[in-house]
Image 1 (cartoon, rainbow, N blue to C red):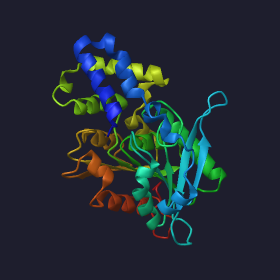
Image 2: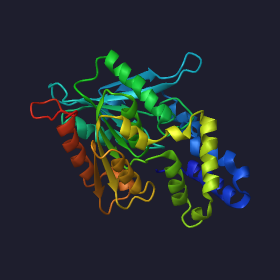
Image 3: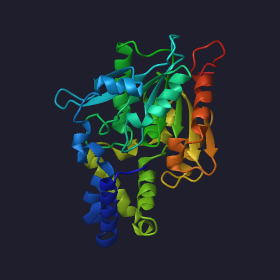
Length: 325
């Protein structure tokens, strides 16, 4: 999971603290590093709540609106953007497109454009605490998946769900996509690129990648205490950030794509997810591919697998297979 310098420094400080002073003195620092969304540290990121219409036209964004996913006491809005197929034919399906941590929907525009080119309506969402959305904390898919249920409700109210509903997610967004499918039966198909299986497992993986060599000296107890503190600070149960449990709860067809050289979210996460639901999932391993390479997809491998999957399990046409078969 890529990181901004400020967040990386905080993670490094937390891990160094664990090395020097042990679990008790470092839980607060680690918890803050683990739970803080980028907009907590760079509040000017969402200074403009909407994108200028001229910029939207240049980017190929057809619609943009905000969805309230908070409460009366604590409003919280997410930015949603729509990229439609260029031709006048009805979309073959609708696909939510979810970004990774410390990113935004705009970073997923190439994926959205490719989906639109293949006839799908792509729905970009800035997850809570990212891009132009509100929020200060990460909950590793727990609250984010609940937010997306509300986004789907808003899409239906606006009559923007055309055909079946799928989700394409990368990294943090991939794990969130699977958790969403576990909660919402409206999801028919998922493509998860480099997802983590559980929060408790990915935090040590990522932390030790940030501090290669030295990070391996941080005791598991310190990292686990940091995860517990992150849950306390962000008001969620880290044990619920579990994509393995979610993939067993959904009937959606799930394609897991993972790079064999992924150090940030190691390949075992993808393998574990497929093993948790072999009857309705498929695993594709990409050789010589790391985390960022899978995300950026310079060779188009992820795009090819994604389109094949959605054409088979999502598309509305006479040749499409029923995703429930």
